[in-house]
Each structure stands twice: as C-alpha cells, then as structure tokens.
Length: 178
Image (tube, rainbow, N blue to C red; front, side, top):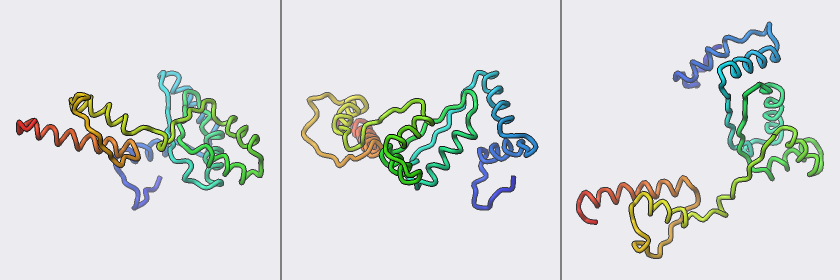
C-alpha cells in the first residue's frame, strides 16, 4: 500500500498498512469475513468499531456507510457503535430513497439491532453535574456552595471547569489559604 505524503505514518498507520497488504484480490470478501470471524472466535476476541458524527455526512454518504457496514463487515464477533442524530439520518434516508417515515425507520432497523437514545445536551442539568463533581473532586461540602452561574454547554466544558478548579484549589491548599 503506497503511503500518502499528508498521512501521518505513526505506528498505528503502519500497522493498518501492513494488515491491508495481507489482502489479495484473488480471494473474495466473503473468504476474508470467514477468516477474520474465525480468528476472532478462536481467540475469544471482539472487534468493536466506533463511528461518530454520522449526522455530519450528506444522505449519499450516510447510505454508503450503511452499505459498507451491511455488506463488508458482517463478521462474527464484530460490533459497531455509531453515534448520530436519528432525526437527521432518517430525513436523509427519506430524501435519498424517496420513502416515507415508516420505510426509513424500517431501513435503519435492518441495520441496527440495538438503539440507545442519549439525552440531548440541552436537556442535561450541567449545574447538578458540577455540584456532584465539585463535591467529589474539590472536597467541598454542600455548605460551601453559594449561588453561581456558569455558561456550561457540554460535558467537555464542564470537565475543563472542574480541572481548572482542582488546580486552583490544590495551589490554594499548598499555600495554606484554605
């Protein structure tokens, strides 16, 4: 496999390249499915593939990803965890295959065996999460809390805020300020 100049050649990419070089056009995809599946079963291993932000793709790209998953990765002990906005993906499927809502949902049901709905970020109570993390990591008691307001819109922002407080509080403790 030829490397592209813009592709990072860290060890992971070298491993993938080495792995892909082992494939030959003289064998079918079905052959490789069976070999990989048998190897995973024999070693009692599972292959878990994570795909996120599927909803950043357009309808054609979404259908292409689903087609690749359905046709190429029907391998024993192989699992996909895919994150996407269900409403967006359904709307793209409806548009691309000219179907109604029910047929679009049926299409997804054929691909996914299990769906887990996560709460919307806007529905999440970040202040309550902050309180719990502050009590745990900053070793504060509930009486230490005053009314406060932080513009926290995501878990990433919350973790950054907590980490900043931890650094600040650790410095203050070392300086015997608290």
